Amino acid sequence: MHPVVIPGKIVRFLEQHANLAFAGSCDRNLVPHGHRVSGWHVAADGRTLTALVAERFTAGLVENLEDNGQLALTVEEFPSHETYQFKGRYLGHRPAGDEDYAAVARIRDRFVRSVRPLYADAPDSLLQAFITEPELAVQFEVREVFLQTPGPGAGTRLVPPVQS
Amino acid sequence: MAAILPDDIRPVLDNGIPAIMVTCSAEGIPNVTVISQVYYVDQGHVALSFQFFNKTIRNVRENPRAFVCVNDVAGLAPWILRLEFQRTETEGAIFDAMDMQIEAIASATGMSGIFKLRGADIYRVLSVERIAAPESAVSR
Image (cartoon, rainbow over all chains, first blue to last red; front, side, top):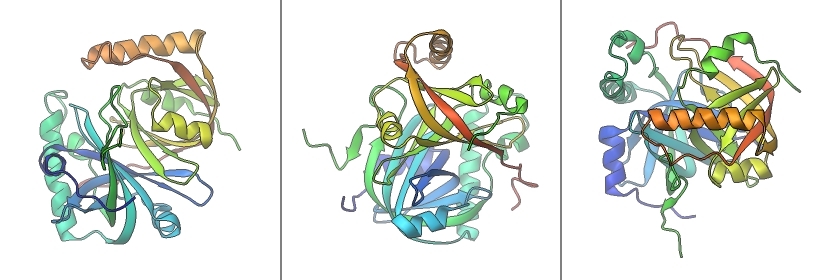
């Protein structure tokens, strides 16, 4: 698979609507590992994503990525459940910084606004705490984008398009 | 290697909050998906719904290991289950109970008629871990 450009509609979804994410990696024994993701950045060229991996969910991640380079990131808008999965090749990582904390704060606010109608009595602090602070920023080059919204079309590859 | 599911996890499995499942293909490519239910079978097994022939289903049939994160909204402390796929059941008590739960979830989320249970995939629990809640979830 070659690098692809994330379609503009999905970039807008990432930047304006999505509020939850989770990443997956795989170790050398083919054991899957999961990593909660608190936020993300889309590069200006639309070819790379940076996943802001949450505290307590970084175990094994860098080792796995340096071993095989494969990362999957699923990003969802809750509660509509519109979901996309991005698969690609690891480019690098760094500790989370101020720009990353700011991005997570925006996504946390978006999440609280989205779930507030479902949990009218829940204190803001409880809903905010669901999106924890990032520890690690992992950059990867996107090579495939899949529709992952629950239903019969889930898993359909959108980019590059499937040849019929 | 096997683990016992503690009683504390039972209400979390039943809380109706979607869980996350990570699998890996035989080529080592991970896949992350949202799953609607993790069904308690017994102290050493859970069942996950098989509704569509998707990547997750293909992955666990070629590489049986799976990672599941179950969200405890009240406690803010997610549970991590490491699982191994064993078999699919297409009838019987577990299948019937999951089928009923899926219909209830679909109805509650406006997705009636979209979800149909093809099978109850039975997994052995290899390990279970509760990730401690952060001291301050929002520290900045």
